[in-house]
Image 1 (cartoon, rainbow, N blue to C red):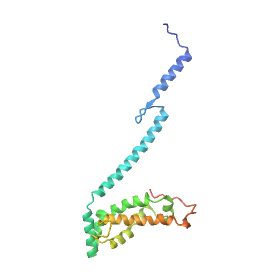
Image 2 (image 1 turned 30 degrees about the vertical axis):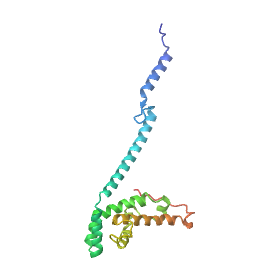
Image 3 (image 1 turned 60 degrees about the horizontal axis):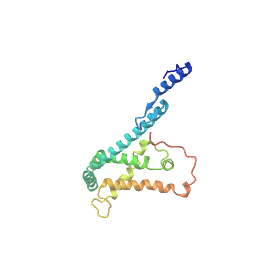
Image 4 (image 1 turned 180 degrees about the horizontal axis):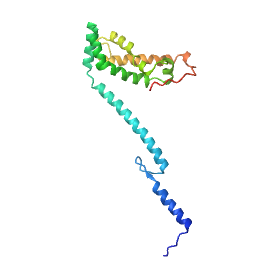
Length: 195
């Protein structure tokens, strides 16, 4: 069989085809062949996925830290504070445990847990730094209400009792949002609590 010589147009078309084939990329995610633009788009999407995985991993690590928390120690410090009124016990509990717990509960229940409109209505005028103290009053009330080793409480650990108190407190925002006077609210200035 005799090979036919290609015309310059056919040769250019074949060269262009080879060049475009050379630019194709194989997706590391699903193994499909992608154009350079599709490959770049996939890489950006993959970076977003990796960032989200990293954030979730950090949250899980935060939860593991709290699972390893010595609940007996925090219970003992709060009990001694209630019995003696000595500020040193409270300060030690705050420095060692309560500040971190408070911060994680603000992140979970206020920043991520409230609908945007509830944040805008009830937390307007607060900066992120001011939110760090948002649960301080709830903490003091919870210390006063907590009865160590009380059989009628759902849990005997102070940290869990405080977490439930925060859950109830934030639920109040959600309940107020359902009231008829807030049903027609419009024109709220967006508030960014994540900066």
